[in-house]
Length: 360
Image 1: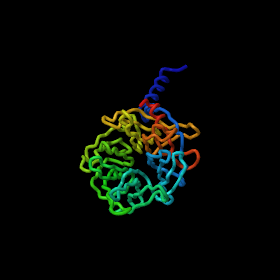
Image 2 (image 1 turned 90 degrees about the horizontal axis):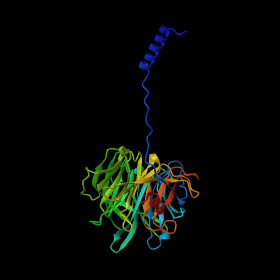
Image 3 (image 1 turned 180 degrees about the horizontal axis):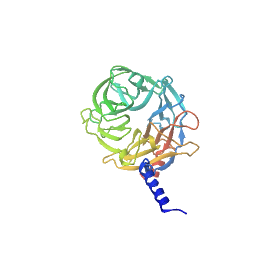
């Protein structure tokens, strides 16, 4: 039979256990917005290097012959890295050895001499703190390397081009792991040679890689990986200290790492969209391209059409130009961290499917 003394002793021991035991804290599971699901309709050949090799892409549109448009992707391996050109079916057409090629961007219309313009391609290489330029050609070599005078003075991590609508001047923005962003003027310096002159420095608080510019509106968008997405004026005399934080991890809509950024430019009466790769959540956030940069939702690329799911994306790019039956409203392209067929590659999604999924 249990006595009062026994019950008192058990109660005392229970109180002692509760007082002396370490506190147990229940951490709520982090939740993110419910993203719409889309599927890729094509994928590129895998890059040649193993491990974390594929990183970024850019799209070159042939407006006269859309079917001849192409994709340029990076392989950032220190020894066997490259820039590879793929067609819209994902087939590799040409590879230019560029060890440690990380991010890539391009613009049409660069002029070495009056009356003649060429597509200009730029990539960054951390191993020797270099910014490399290439001329995109119609015949081999499809990428012709240009000589570069001048240096940016930082170890590059990300890169994007800007062509000023106000002045017609060409610039490159280069991001760094420390949060420093350098803007440099690009000028022709003779046949197949360009010069770089640093004109401005922006300093954010932590690691930055992805960036994209809006030429028409004079904006540069920068991804601070562990904080949020910034907007600054892109002209060299714009404010470099008071950027607009469009969205942050604190909002609960996005999470680290925030990687690639790209712009879907206007079509008809739509103003266009800013897209961000949310690597930590394996999804993509969509915002209005124009102020107040309203959040429009998110999507993920799931398994479908015989192509595997896309996860932990680095670089992204998009175009609104119609590119045939598979891409009637343009194409969105994303790096895939784990490709079922082998090494990393890039996945192509019809923008029409994204627009319909999000009701844009």
